[in-house]
Amino acid sequence: MCTVRVLILILTLAVLHAQPATLREAADQRPLLIGAAANADEYGMANRLNEPQYASTLAAQFNMLEAENAMKWSSIHPSQSTYNFGPGDKLVAFAEAHGMKVRGHNLLWHSNNPDWVNTYAKTATPAQMSAVLEDHIKTVVVHYKGKVFAWDVVNEAIPDNPSGAGTPLRDSIWYNQPGIGQTGTGYVEQAFRWAHEADPNALLFYNEYSIEGPGAKFDAMLNMLKDFVARGVPIHGVGFQMHIDTNGYPSSAGLAQNIQKVTALGLQVHFTELDVRIRVSNGTASAADLQSQAATYQRVTTVCLQNPGCTAIQTWGFTDKYSWIPGFFSGFGAALPFDASYQAKPAVGAMIDAMQTVAPVLSGSAVVNAASYAAGAVAPGEIVTLFNVNYGPPSILEAVFDGSVLSSNLGSTRVFFDGIPAPFIYALVGQSSVVVPYAVAGKQDTVMQYEYNGVRSNSVTIPVVPSAPGIFSLNQSGTGPGATLNQDYSVNSAANPVAAGGAVQVFATGGGTIVGGATDGAVATGAGAQTLNVTATVGGLPARVLYAGPAPQLVNGVLQVNVEIPQGLSGPQPLAINVDGRPSQPGITVAVR
Ligand code: G3I
Image 1 (tube, rainbow, N blue to C red):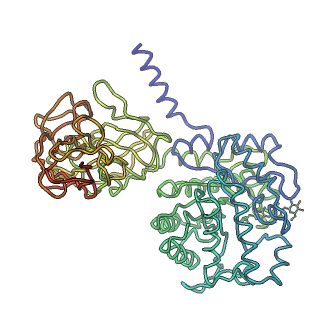
Image 2 (cartoon, protein in one colour):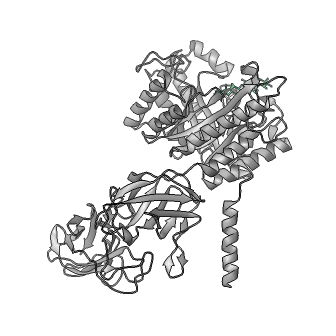
Image 3 (cartoon, rainbow, N blue to C red):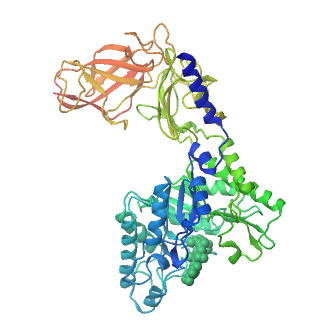
């Protein structure tokens, strides 16, 4: 039996490490959204989804798609009283049939508006334009509610040569010709608010070109974003269109800097319209230019993966058979990852290689106490959570035993403290939890590193403290009712309070070392004692500590403190512990009868 198990494990690991054959397989391993703009039968053209190679390549290579044109005003709202959802619905149906996410594009643009609305704008009042725009946004977003997970709400509202921070926006029927009765960025904000009302769960993006590198246009956009975020406008991300060539724009440093400035606002970045145009002769590009194109695809893919918060890379089409480039950039073409016969170009292997080799990013500030979410330092045996690491198991993996201890290699994920792999509580891209090895005790700091699929992150140095107590909360928020048990082992709550004079079992972590030592990842077989002094308060009053040590039958690192409730208290009372002078987080309560 054991041999079979080992064999299965090896095979599983082997599968994890196999070179992915498609962009989608490589992206799913990160995970990363890898998308392509796609077409159905909008504008009356033949339904491209009925073209076998078009459909098979789209489904095999991408985990996301976006309507290139089918959801634009000119296609979806051809007359004031008519909505044409057919082509968009075909794309959504295709995506759902192939487990793909759908981006929507776009709800408001200065271009590609149908004739009727351009004519209407010539005589309409701003109030009338506002009514038309609100009806459109809400009708379209409600139609695709729960099907389109992210919208390009407003496309290209910043002019190409803005005059500065207070830049006027690009002229359009929605802004000032005649506009919808808003000033400044008000019409942009209003569009986001209507979209959010229509689908509160959809991610709402502002989409723009020529903002991928530093410059006045990016600065003008950033000013608008900062104002929106500061005032709580429902915006969740920015689309960097990424219509580029092989001449180096945007530089990797400039692109990274702009991504970071946007994600620093708490917004995501999606590369929404990536294509890398190269010179063609009769539609054919040279081998050298194809290699240069591949290097550019690899370079920008790398920058996205190196910057947590950059969560999607989408190409604008995917086959050179259908691309806007040749018609717009004379002498250029062959801009997409697959050629006109749907064969992978060097760009595909280059993007896969980036997804296989770009190291995950570990940030010291994203290593927090698993109970209190307090960052800054770690203690021996502390259960910590690592957030924002952008490369890891796409679905949560719960702790498993490796012999008598919790495994320190979960789904090809490992977390090292001074080279010692830490036992896992769970592993998941963006949020994993491990137990800090007791070997850090007595050190000033520890060097942390994360590894997934054999690729190691940067190292971060984290201060070590003897204790960093955090009490687990019932709702995992780090505050509110504590995860505490009454003496009869029932969960303490307002409906099930403890009597004053009674006692509760408080569960925490960050209590530091254990008398007699403790094995990393082992289950506490029975009672023990913390090395450091543990005190407690309830309702601000000193409370007698009846026990402070490992929690029997739970992994070493869980601190159990049995606390007697002082007399004279009732109702929800602040609960805190203190280990060697370091307090647990504020905001935890215990219910007293
Ligand atoms: O093929 C039909 C034709 O049968 C029909 O009679 C005619 C009626 O207008 O439309 C034709 O479709 C054209 C369509 O491209 C398919 O080729 C549309 O005219 C034409 O307007 C449309 O252009 C699109 C352009 O946006 C304007 O909407 C391009 O495909 C599309 O790639 C381009 O994409 C934009 C993004 O939305 C925003 N960022 C820039 C990007 C490139 O311009």
